[in-house]
Image 1 (tube, helix red, strand yellow):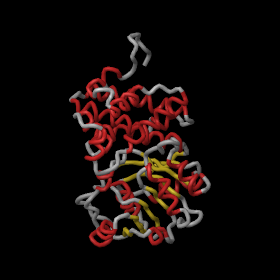
Image 2 (cartoon, one colour):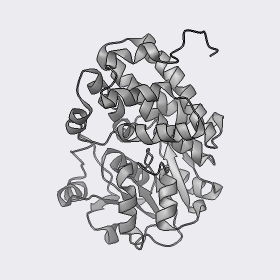
Image 3 (cartoon, helix red, strand yellow):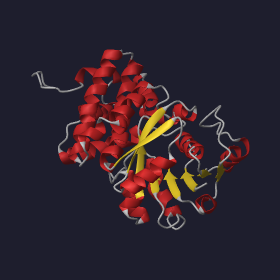
Length: 333
């Protein structure tokens, strides 16, 4: 059995650790809290994040990073995007030389606007060919319950992507590959912002027409943005774009959808953050994405209105009538 390490024992980190163990690996999982690590290792459960899910025998957890990373042949990162850089500083000297480093995160760094793979490259000073990212319609609890789905693994190096995809292949999860890291990462980030918008209108009480319009026009915004930064448009029509967008917008399991729904029901941004016991990456990514969009001259009216709702300057009920434009002149689709 090959040895892999996963850093981050939240719902997605634990789920992906299960996927890797079910795929035949011996998996060490870093849990920051001692009591959580003990529960995972001794009870084969993570009741905080994956209630009712039995974890595989070949998966154990520890709060000690050197122990988790020792001998790892692949390292997977599943920490909140805004804390990635500080966590990488802790593990820089512990990650075995030459192994693939895989991002499971969907966010951009505040202030810099860097994608997660860029932060990894900067902090670890490694060849981009060693870095891979995983994305797709991957709601953690559904995968933990072994409901069939697919992911995409992206790396500039095809052998790295293939190695990760082979490790993350189980009877219930099929991993595809591509080499469009930019499109794959931005798809995972941008769909969260559209999912917040969907949650807002759902919380207000609007129906399926409104949500379908936002999803469709939201995919246009996602594609325009990603292509402006060097992505291929077809990536945004694939698992990392449209696939992830549908899953995140339609499911109550989506943290971003849930955060938006609370906003639509009248809670303030600070109240939503307090009420959520897990990170909704979309809330943190709105501002940096709009800054990046402005730098390339990309118009993102839906994301812009989500920002206004977060700031309290737009009533949630007013987000839908202004989906595409403020002008009365007809526009081409």
